Length: 162
Image (cartoon, rainbow, N blue to C red; front, side, top):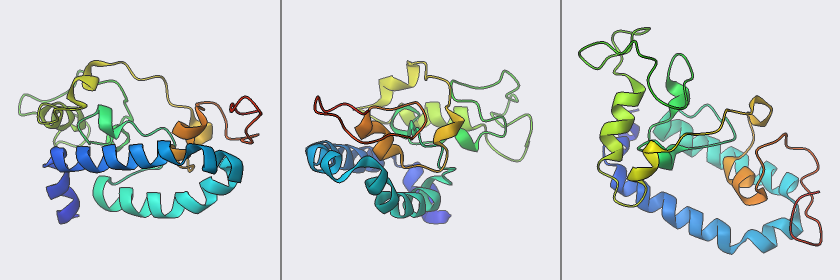
């Protein structure tokens, strides 16, 4: 996890990598929609999980908000809080549940301050987590414009999901 920790502590690099991936997936959106989001999810999920697990200790929630949280995964919070600290953050910035661990949200805030492109997104409230998307690719969720369960991911003529 050392390389992952180093990368997280250098969020500008990760921000650039995210922006490049985001651009690439958006450019390929039409093709991926024609292939079918369910099939694309099967192809992308494995490499996405491996990369994110190594760098971010990813839990594959299916609704990744790393770019909005200083490239710090909020699902690594022992309480799974997606919109900020619980109020039990210790005076030294550590977690109330795991005192040896720095609060995920303290780290997220500090890292977001070093992100010129997405750093301000830290102040946005995230929608509640849809647990039915757990285990699916967050890139496919983004491309499909879905936050509801991953069923019927076949595009319609209008380019929206059925």
